[in-house]
Length: 595
Image (cartoon, rainbow, N blue to C red; front, side, top):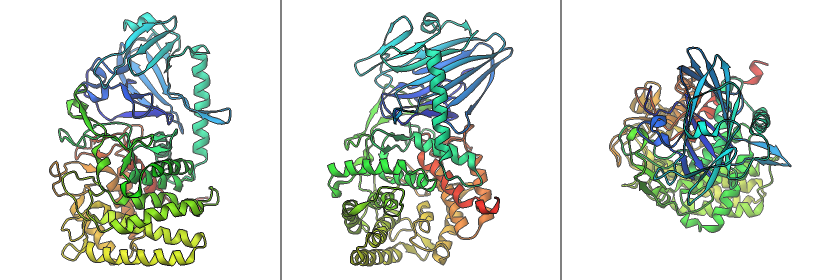
């Protein structure tokens, strides 16, 4: 039965490429040869999704009645069971990631295994990639064991131990033995596909199980935290250390809203949230790689021209344009490539980089930050101190207005505050006193300008009259103690004004596209954390449990949630997955309480 696309999707990947697999085992989104590349499987951005006829790699069981899907525990390998009236098939999908010769092997490859589980399953395979953002289809040629696809930009092949004719002609066949499909570079495989797939699967599962074993997990909520951590890892591009905000582009924040953005880039703010969450779990290698990305980017960009986001190889020019060859998710265009936010002023980025780097100076497991890194961070601090009270586009990247946003100002303060601590750590005590004085002056000015006595809360902007959910982070950023009456009053005011059941709006005033009609997922986690911080722990845990129930069937979250419970916005959203980790760590019982 045809159905519209939804975000009941599983993510597979290996930090080089990624793919989204729907609940019936159709791959509906994959970019090649890297995470921000051309979507060769692009059916997600069509009205009919997997049933659009193009941009899909689907397996269809003739007598299908229902399906079930789950990850192999503690891995990025997903299994989908297609259950028919008298037969069943298991589809296993993964992108190889394993240790080889002292390095991590992560080819631009998808491995798909089909196995008969019961009966005499009759299946058909639809393999219909697109090119140039849905503008065309690649040229197809056959070898003895593979379908070769090529266009002007790239070439790849799908090698199989099944019938090429059945795949090419989409002819139903009896699945009487396991079959393997390997999508990868346009080169012959050096091993029989089935044997290769079994070896890669075993070693990929082993890699992820070892990685998860290294995490410092909380007592409670472990399944949710593990899935969130793996998802954050998959949203990083290991070649450069960039962290993507999401894997997709142009999933609308709300139906027919025009709020369709390309999130396949590295936002400095979002990356700090990701690094912070993974650091809390002890997974510090993502931070180290990200700092290398920042170092390389910073070397090419004067501090005063630092952008809010960059391409995943550090490129500054990610200009935005609309492609008309894809109709959009559920037909809700436009589909955008690039993001104009790269040209915005967002002053919080200076603090975000300093916060991301600060642990290097205090964690003896890591390579020392050293004087050179500290001097580079100081240049960012100087810029933060100069800009903290100047208008910018703010954390929500407003396109038609600017203001002095409280969050941006506090992030600038946080950068200078942490520089004082870092300076003391490296023995530069006079420098530490200088940064402390500057941070104290900035803090006092923010307190005076952001507090709104009429609201009885910190406003979203200096002298503003509206609330913003980012104020929930003030205690976590150490700007104000959680027991300060002003913070408590702000949390309570936001609860009254922005909360809707277990969900939270980021703000309620009209912006460039009108008043938001969907809630912003991570804000609800911020609210739960703030409730816990002000002593309402039972309420916070109850809220967190309800938010976990909002995840899709494999534990993933998008950017936004509608009041009807549907997920909207780009997927999976790193902000949202970070929210799961930080809340779980705050709300879990201590290991000392149970062991």
